[in-house]
Image 1 (cartoon, rainbow, N blue to C red):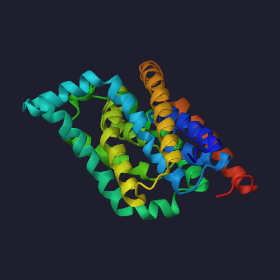
Image 2: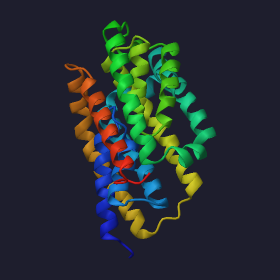
Image 3: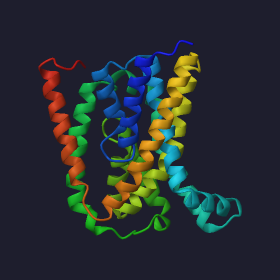
Length: 275
C-alpha cells in the first residue's frame, strides 16, 4: 500500500483547519490555502481533498440538527407548508452561487486560489463585517429560521456568491446577507448551516466530476482520515459558535480576519510567502 505518513499528517492538519473554520466567518477555504502553502500541501490531490473533506463538516451539521432536518424532510414529502417552505428557501438560496460557481469555476481556480487574493479577501470581508454588523445587526425583524421569506432567502443566496472568492467566507457572506435582510444573527447563522448542505455537496460533485476519482489506495485512506477529523472538530466548534453568537458580537472574527490578512500581505510583500 502506498500510504504516505507525511501526507496523512499534513492532511490531518488541513482537516483540523477545515473543521474549525468551515462554519465560523473566517473562511475555511482561505485558511486551507494559507496553511497548505505553509506545510506544502499542494497539487491535484490536495485541491480535491480540501473540497471533499468539507463533507465531514457537513455531516456534523446533519448530526447536530438531525431532528430539524428529518422533521422538515417528512413535512416536505407530506406536503405540509412548513417543510415545503423550509426546503424551498434552501433551494432558492442555493441557486445563485450554484449557477455562478458552475459558470466561473475554472476562472476562480485559475485566478483566485492563491495566498495573495485570500489575504485581500480576508481584509475586505473583515471590514465589511464590521460595517454591516454595526449598521444592521440590531435591526432584525426575523428572529427564527422558520420566519425567513423566499425573498430574504434569495438575497442571502446572492450574498453567498461573494464566497466564491476564497477568503471571503461562505458563512460570513450569508450572515452579512441575513443582517441586511433583517434576519437575526442566530437565525442567519443556522440558515447558513443548512444552506451549506447542498452547497458543499454541489461543490464536491463538481470537483470530483472535473478531477475524476483517480485516487490511489493511500490517498483514499488519507481522505477517510481527513473526513473523520473534519467531522469531529466541526461537531465541537458548531455548538460553541452558536452559543457564542447568542451573547456576543461577531466583531472579534472580523478583527482576526483583518489582522491575519494584513500580516499575510506583508509576508507576501517581503517574499516570505509565495503567491
